[in-house]
Image (cartoon, rainbow, N blue to C red):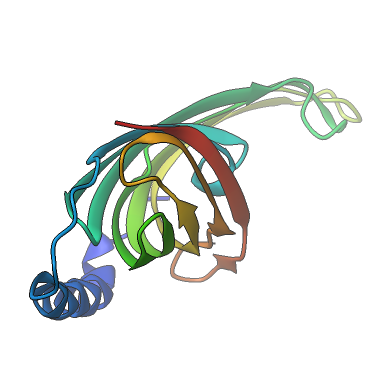
Length: 179
């Protein structure tokens, strides 16, 4: 099922407007030297099981995130024999606020996702072969520890995933390195 992303644009525009206004207010404060790049592993979160991510801070309080996850389960839910595969690419914009290393993180984004199910239903023996793609909405509300001078970083927070008719509250935790 392919989701029409145009319906989400009004929410993204409001979020981008909020970031632009608060960024201009924040830019008037004293700028601090900080590391802009981060690589981290996220458990659960936007990748459902895990994801590998790169985060680039455009400004001290705004970052862009791009991630990747691929996983496969076998057998699936004990009702089929076969394989469920999931691939997605979380793409997000985040607003960060706080003092020095301790930050509140608020983000919004999309996740192009691809799912494949290939197997046999065990009760009736019927073949199952399904493939699908979707663009899911996602968000982050959480805490980020990222030292200004770089080094070990961590994140924890709520990471809801949504479509037009479903909203799932999820959570994730991350560990990585900023440089």
